Image 1: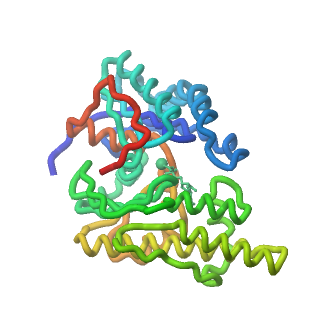
Image 2: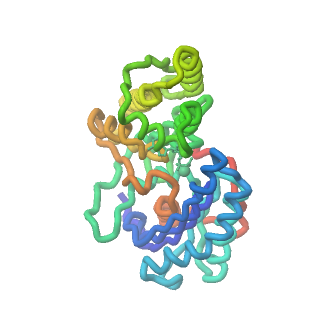
Image 3: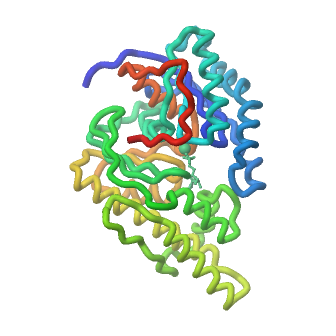
Length: 342
Ligand code: KG4
Ligand code: ZN
């Protein structure tokens, strides 16, 4: 593989409800990462309230950037390029990070790189904490399962920054299904961690929920599963005052994990992938991690727990490969709230 030029990237991420900044060396060594979460604010609405998110980003962005830079023990002079999430995400949130990044790039005369948030999630597997053991780099051809709040898709990567989308969800994303089922079961926002917690004490085989049968083996559909949970909840409520929340959560989670695992394995075999990568917020799910790590016939890369949900380190990693492979952006670029990876 070609030797890429060394570079330190400062990256900004504000696509949803986390204001984040990170400094990363040579695409892999993490020098600092700061994430200011708005989760507690949005929890009272049961989901992200876009206008509130945008205002919070305005309040947090300068302190977050200053903190990340200070923790890296560097100054802006030591940074080679500024990376920023350009999309997909909430327009009003993306704009705050984009303007901050443009200001930094303009003020320091450094290049700017607009990064796709989904590409960022994928590149989180390249990152390690500076000073710690260097983990093996993911090898191509790589089958990448992306499972976040807004996206569920399988991409074949034959090289850096090269994606062939084999399939995606026809309706709800896996994270969205976790969030909706959590609400059905009366569990708190965000749904993924609450469902996982409830499922710990539940019986995953008590309810047999359906798996969608689709023409393409690499596509996903989770809305039928969500409806099946709703019907089961309504049925049980008629019979008894107390819901078996733990068993429902465990049975739902087991169905999602099995679907994601089975489809990823099939795609990896069919397309002769060398390794597998799992990324996005749902990759924080413990049973999902355990299933991939213990049952896969391929080597599996799953990011460190702290890098699964939204952060700026992953934007710096993707930004580094874009910078090193001469894919920098124009200062005149705009945010792209809808932006498929391929
Ligand atoms: O990647 P992410 O932080 O934001 C987006 O880009 O969408 O993903 C957020 C999603 C949410 O739907 C959240 O419920 C889910 O990831 N999630 C989890 C877990 N932690 C976060 N889902 C299942 N189990 C978890 N432990
Ligand atoms: Zn995300």
